[in-house]
Length: 180
Image (cartoon, rainbow, N blue to C red; front, side, top):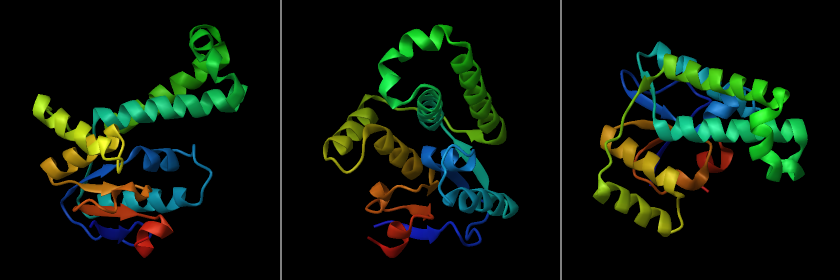
């Protein structure tokens, strides 16, 4: 079971490395209308004030870029138009402008965080695939867990999927905090 910490409280860690999940970055950058946005932004500031290092990885940046582009697409065209994405992403000026903004957000995160590079070999990827096949995590989440465990990272996420993992988890999700 995860050791769960409340993102609404002062950061309990000092001089550690902390990995933020994609859903937290979406909250921080305002693409999530929920009230947790301020909680995660405040936790980010608190973590930095305690000498922690915020880290990121290619999996988070990739997922963030793709999800934020999808959010922007749906805001512009509606969810029913997603099948036209490939043609519109090459030619629609409004969408291209939004994608550039998403790119800038990702570049800002890369500038503000330390990039960790996981050197996955075939065996590590096989383990992550096997974890994902059990149904508790998707493949990207299994890779993030592996990264946290191998690099002794604290993980910040709003997802309940991680409560069964034996690591430090920070969340503002009431169900995670209640242990549900």
